[in-house]
Length: 132
Image (cartoon, rainbow, N blue to C red; front, side, top):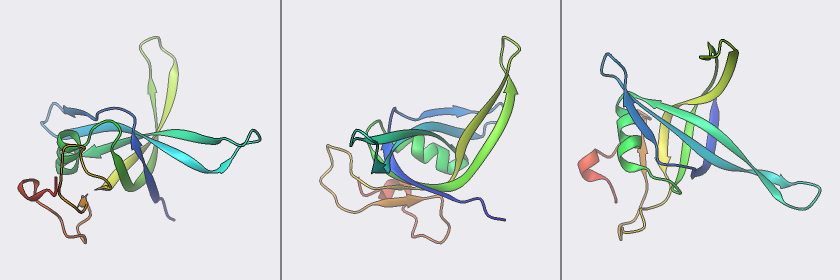
């Protein structure tokens, strides 16, 4: 069985960085991903996909990505259920990120390159060595 997701899109808002009661960092963000085809009116539609990054990756995403930035997210799809405050049952689909690649630079940066976080096989830049 396989559950792998690879997305490339722009953040729709700044990531929300929180900490669990045990102190584990978690960042929530949403990517706008264009569909690869046009609809009947000739326009391309966009999907808005919720993503979650945990631990060190979550801190990095929360501290360095902002609304509008282009990013690649690799991870797995997770569907979870919960009960809302009004008692109704709800389901949420979200991508749990294993790695996040920053595909552009902040607007005020003059440096080049991109950075990958979360993938142990990639050359990981330390926060002090970020290319932006």
